[in-house]
Every structure is written in C-alpha cells, then in structure tokens.
Image (cartoon, rainbow, N blue to C red; front, side):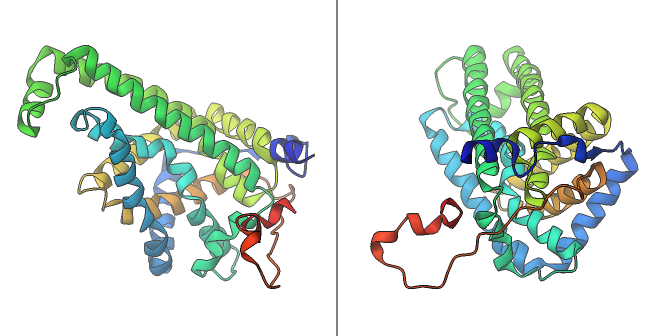
Length: 294
C-alpha cells in the first residue's frame, strides 16, 4: 500500500487535473510574482536558501575527485537540474501566502510531514542521479578534448577553452549535451514537485502531468528553462553566494508558473502527519523523525 501511495497518491485519476497552455508574457508575470513573494518573505527566504551556497560548495568538494577547474561551469549550470527539488520549501511558502495562510518559516518544512513526501523523495532521487550523470558526462567531454592533464591555472584554462579548436568543441558539445539534460529535468520536474506540494497525486501522476505540460507548452517552458539556467549560473559565479537571492525568486516564481499551467483543485490535498508532543527517548531516533511512516 505504501508503495502504491508513492506512485499514485490518494487518487488514481489524473483526469481530475487540467493542463493549460500559456504564453511568453506569463513568464514575465511569474517572475514579478516571485520577486513579490521574496520581498514579502525576505527573512524566510534568506533563512531557507542559506543552505544552498553550502550545497554548492559540497557539490564542488565532491567533484575534487576529478580535475575541479573544468567542472566549475557544469556544477554551476547543474543547479538547474536539482533546483525543482531544492525549492520545495519555497513552493510551500508561496502556496500558503497565496491562500492567505500563515507563511512563517516553520511552515516551509511542512512538506517533511506531508503524505506526498514519499513521492517527492522518489522524484528527488531521480534528479540527483541525473545530476551525477551530467557531471560524469561533462568530465568525459573535457577529457576527450584536453586529456587527463589538469589545467595549470585559471588563465591557461580560459585561454585553452576560448582560443583553441579543442576548446570550441568543448563549448559546443558540452552545451548541447547540457541542453539535453536540462530539457529532461524541465520535462519531469518543472510541474511535478509543485504539484506534489499542492496535491496528493503520487509520483507517477505528477510525472505524467509534468510531461503533458511540457508537450503542451514546449516553447514557453523551454524559454523558462533558459531563464532559470542563466540566472542560476549568474548566481553561482561569486562562490555560489548569489543563489541566496536567485534561488528564492526562482522558487517562488516556479510555484506561480505551476499555478498558471496546472489546475488540480479537484484533486485531494496532501495530509500533514503532525508529530505528537509526548516524551521522546534516545532509542526513538531516527524513527521519530518520520511520523508519516506510522
């Protein structure tokens, strides 16, 4: 039963959900709404995304198994691959603000107690796998053009990439392959994670709706993907610190994009499994953290 709920949630009827077609002007509107949410909840947003620079540095540290310098750009652009999962708390804050509910920072973590958390975790694992594959592929593209010898300096690396045939090949092939990865994540993740925050539909239904949204709005969502990637790269440049502004704006904006594209009001909302206040013992850890499993 638990596995079935992860896949299809509280309903097995995706026909209850409608996918709409939107235009390029809607992208401007959702960005404005995202900025408005950020301005209305700046303390919450700063608190939440304080972890994102840490995530970036951790991911960079993990990449030290390779030659790190050539992977700076893949790591920075790779934030677009895990962004839909990383912004879950921001979706929840925007949802609550839109509904006129308390949007204090503690509610951003309500998703951890949601009946949709299993489906969210399953899709999040998929994105992490895709990210890891992207880094491996990007590293192999670099090695095929420049070999295993690491660049001697940032200046030499920049010169080799911008002024040599091997560097031009790296730029063209790397960006083309990265575009494929970004399109995949945009297709499966742009609508699925906000939908799971909003409705208890399960991973399979959320994936189906996200794919339908991409097929119905290929140019518009493609443009949105380019906007997200560009802003994430810009935010990542000063040691990932710019993400403390870029991530909340994009997270909030993605929620509003979902609301424009998907109509799921007739589907059941997720149930929150609140923890009881009884005394806890050391032996209860870590099982006590996962109240939804009871």
